[in-house]
Length: 478
Image 1 (cartoon, rainbow, N blue to C red):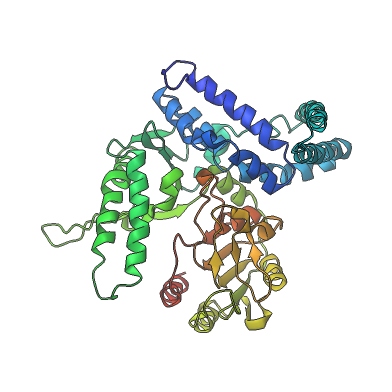
Image 2: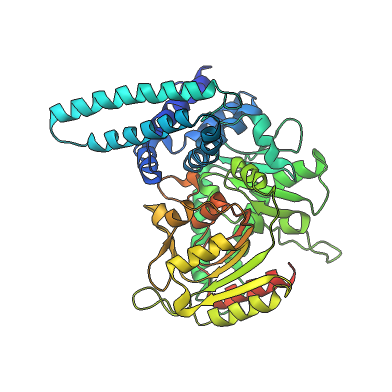
């Protein structure tokens, strides 16, 4: 209501909503139950970007960064907060850590039993749930009284998030029903605001759908024919989204050419190939107008916290080792044979420096357990196989192995701190969740959460022959 009537309390209302929403989700014990709790509130899907848009209109860019981070990637943020800090807490106060874990599990169990059709039983469960919630909140308060735990389970502040821009600016692209814009988080100082006046949320949805159609069309076209539909779409991305951002990078931040930048898209923007933005223009002297990748070295990050966390995990260097995993013949009912997989594995093995400890796993050896072991035992991994994104239950998204599927949940349950890089030569590895698009729940993000500092994935279906061509180019120039 405050937002609709543009009341001055709108920003405070968003903050209160986030706090209540976080408290509700935090008490869920399992990863899946937390997502179910989040998706139960359909109106909350756009809260992060709407809150950021509101903060921008109030000319509070630091708060906008904090709010969009607090609301986006909530599942990842909570899961990560409940991993490393608890290890530290157990070393300082094991009894408090035990109480916190026990109460969290009891809360989840009580919530699950509340689905009883018996009214008396439901009332008893609700009463027990409220009692446990008060105890849980008391333990959290007790933890925050401990040294170095004052912000336990609290969202990060701008000064903490700015660490993500230590090696180059991070660009948060906000797609809200109220406005579309970008916020550039620089290495130091205040954020920079970039309005995108030509873009509305409906335009981005149409653009996303247009790319999906163009990719499907391209897969059945003669490779020699020009991709005119893709050219039009990529030019639109350049003109209306990336060019205004590039102008600020060049003129306000005076960022040098070929510097690193990170893109952090939201909502429909997560399904648009921003880094491929291109003007497709020829100057009078016949020179080509540079595209985004001619100007800067672009990477993506699901959230600023994910980037900060991945760098914190790089403190200790280990001896590099490289595992190449390929499953081209998954078996009946699991997809068609990928005929180029074996030659792709051979190519990777040849291009990876011989000084690196290298192993190749293929054929019947590519099982769920074998792939998990390879992920945990090697610093670099190249994975080539069928992949499937589950849009309704993203934690069931998986890689197709010889026996059982290797799911996103399998990966998230592993802590792989020595991991450095993963190349996913697999379809749909960077496509998010339809129910909670801003949670960016997909295999590439799952590998990053588990410890991999850098991950290459795909937005769409990838032909295995094309994938092999990309692989050769990447490892040749690595």
